[in-house]
View 1 (cartoon, rainbow, N blue to C red):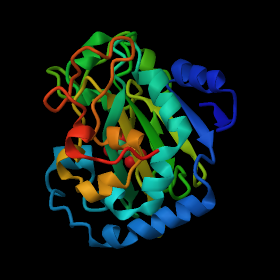
View 2: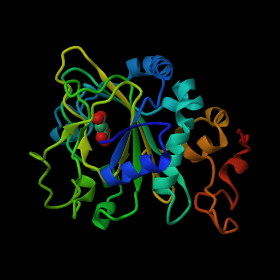
View 3: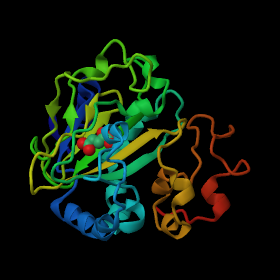
Length: 295
Ligand code: AKG
């Protein structure tokens, strides 16, 4: 995977993403942004439920056991997230380039998930993020991108502490078979490499690339990452943020971030007189709710 700076030529960044199925952006978050985000979410991380699925083999392979913590509500807990992280222009430029072709209805959030692997956490099974939309794999490698993951390292990512495993070139395999499909035999034995990153780096990943959380083989280190998954607006997100996010939090977000959370209706760029999906009585959702149009 290429490692580029956030200020590198955008076309070079996007070309690397398309060719390799992902690109690492060095230092997308500054050390102070990472430190304040980690501090702001820590009380919620400390209160996270203890998972009770450790005896269910299939669920463990998918979600991890009680040493894998998943936290979905950064928008409510973190001012740094609301003001800075969700406003990174590169995230929006990449989303626009990857997800806004063909229909032009834009993109919204599928999820924002902090994933912390505690010492001993088992490796996750290899999967493609687009398997969440079950038929997308059947469209093959040349299909438009359904989703894109911006995976930010909130601690160092090392092979030992469970850096995400990547199967290089798997976004171009001639046939994609989903783990829920009949006849799926798993990817055991497929060669993968660790996505080693410094704190603050971000991996922009195609939803066609096979990957999975690694095994944290250390006895003391926690590996923490923030997965921001964006999805074409035509598709249904993983997390129902439009149902669960309080309006006072939404009102504090920029217009563009309100849209990410489902509180704005997409505009069709070329014929915006047309009916839009996700509307409220044919008007913009945010207008109907009386949300402020923050810059
Ligand atoms: C997932 O939960 O779907 C992931 O791919 C997580 C990857 C990781 O934690 O490294």
